[in-house]
Length: 179
Length: 186
Image (cartoon, rainbow over all chains, first blue to last red; front, side):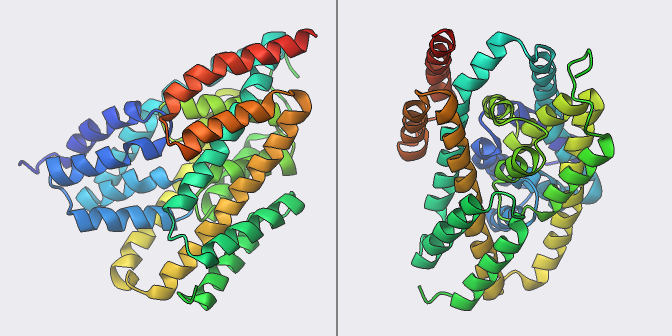
């Protein structure tokens, strides 16, 4: 394998993945792993698991995984190349759709579409959170934290989420692996 | 509203400040819920229906949902510049933090309490998303009496049975829009 132009190779790997990530970034994580670990051998499987964990631990979108892989493979140039290749193509499509959509603001048919799609989007929001919950360690303490924070956020819609999240994190540290 | 159909009230620096803050403080995932809370609940820049329609589009299109919804909101509020500013503000600051963490984790990656801290934060973030789902469901039910049926159907198919999202959306969306149209007429 030639190593002379890694940023360009990262672009070639991440651009198709960007366009294929229908339904969100989670849908291509397995393919990203396959490409960078199995096919190109840029990083090891253990490396990939580490980078994935860090992308979840860091603030911001989980899709920053692409940036981290780029960084691990080829430093700053790799991070820039992988990020641009992963974020730009899909963003251009989203921008074009948003422009068309927002151009027809206030039309009656758009109100109907919005009211019709709202419960669909809501079902997807709940499905996403449910899937994350099922993939967690699923201990009693985790379920308790989920239940309590759900209640707090429903009762206090204007509360800033950050303090609640920090308290939840510290509570889990205090509980440890007891339950 | 001006002639381009954009809301004039929100400025580019306000968009930048909000999305940078969300990008930097949204630990635990579930960013769509953070954005909903800030943009709809706390600031009323968008209505619930506008946001949720944008989120449906964001989920169908390729690309991370949070990026797509940020592009949609920025475009809606301030056109092209609005969507560029919102996206860059959401992405660039946490990018720097993530790379910083990557360097730190080489030394502290095995610490158990750090793992527990992140797990607790992620659990509370799930609660945040559930609460947004609850509020959106309540709102949708008020304007559309078929909303609970559509919502349950989607949740069963995608959440419980783990059917792939795109075909489910493509099948349910036309029906959901048709019943909404019927109601608008009557």
